Image (cartoon, rainbow, N blue to C red):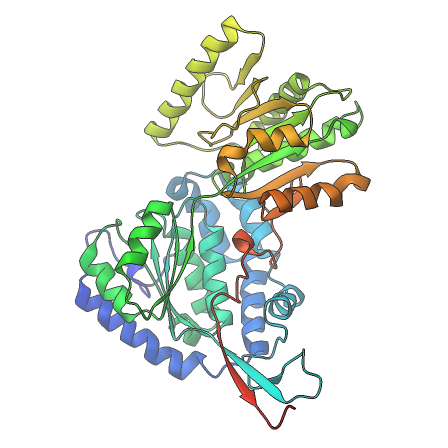
Length: 457
């Protein structure tokens, strides 16, 4: 399948974008939104998004086939990793889930279609209507595709024209998603633009920012600060900075019978998207006192990663990433040779996976790409003390605890500052209604118009 040149990202590598081209594209997107998108109903948009997602789940879908055929060479993910990750993502986009998202975020799924009664005012003296930005710009990080695909879907749901600026070399999957939308409904596809260029091109970004009503950006805290400083005062900015995640396993669930399932869940979280997302664990804390001791848990996890590498290989790495893993391994090989408190398991003749076990509970940033730390702790309180350096930057904690302790554990983690708690094994598979970084995904994007219908005294 050869993709037509609908988007800037479809142009050949030698093509050069100019500020004038971007300004014209922004004007065209706004005109197209006015003609083709602004008056669509919520039901129509839900039908489009669920229909596109259903297509991606079909083996014969040409966009899915292209993603799986060319994706490994383009993205670095293996075919198996791409297939599982994309399937889990698109399975979330059902009509029911989209309606639940609208109801959760906005109170009323039809609030984009016209004035709706305020739910908190039964006498209906006030009504309200939600509006998305006319022109929405996304600055994406590109390490995994899901956040970018989700941003595009949310932008369509709120009827915004969108320009998606991808990191250099990361536009392949967002471009395919945009093409699948264009194929399903070409008028809606005409309200999207996908482009990529190396960050720091001030002339291009100035033209883009000048046209935007709202800018979302994902990246380091430093990058977000730099983007915010360059935006006009009137432009809304929503930034998603660097976040980390970890796992916690209670001793009570570590019987010989249950440990296998828990280890498999931890392995799933490490393997999903090669551990590159902010929801992926850097560390799994394992409580002492169970039938399976923390060091044995680490050994079992190494066995799991070795087994999964045969069916879901990691894929190739850039030379600098492989060198980083090799260098980190070398440090721990020396430590393990001189201390019984450290142990290392590693894939043979490759950097495909690495498990480091330490008695030292201090939180460690992984070099990712299936490189995971397992650390022994006395209890959850010790794990949280050890993770104090990243407090305030923790996205997700995956837990394996007894059922009667799960809610209390989640409350403890919420008070500590984690914005999502889920079972181990589901860290990289949040529901569609997940609140990204604890914030409402749709609510942060929209503005409201209140209509006071009469005397509310």
